[in-house]
Image (cartoon, rainbow, N blue to C red; front, side):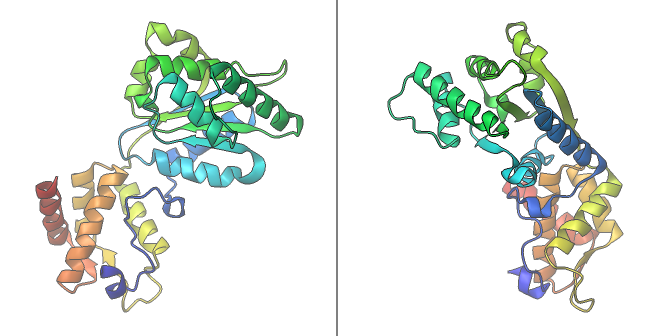
Length: 273
């Protein structure tokens, strides 16, 4: 609706994890470096945690794009599964048939597939998003997958991505064998006030703002301060409130988003929550 008015090619604050809009703060760059290091050096287990809406899923999408054809990847988005269901989902994500195979056969197929990838000089990566939803038995299954290896290196690099609760779960004594194997860890924080301003500019630019100075949209400083106060630097909340603020700008036919429009958007957001 407002994209035509602001001459935008796309909605800049869509809530979907589109890597095209990824804004790399210093911490996001560090997180990506940790992920690439763990995968490239075949560390086996890598753990990325962060608050709700901090951009973990978008970062993982960008990671998949960056890996490209250098690795075969499997992505599990909903890991609230039994150990057997999880294993079947992982085998399927690697493009292998599952049929009525039991756990032994599934593990055998997966191991043979990973050995073939390794023999060709390739790497295999499993990314489990929302990993805080994994049950302890499912995490134990994940640990067993980490045992798939040759004498020289791990056959499968496993990236666990989740909210801070994942760290609490991994700290349980019953999961100490898994926790001890996670040698690469990173916790992704929220944006500060300066980064929030940069984030807004970045998203608008990616959506096509600024190409025509006469029709471009912008958030003034009072709006940026209000957005940060409301969101505390959480990217998902920044997106939600900014999207509503742009809609308010369209309704009031202004291309300068100010504090009053943001506050109006915030009220609507709270009422709808």
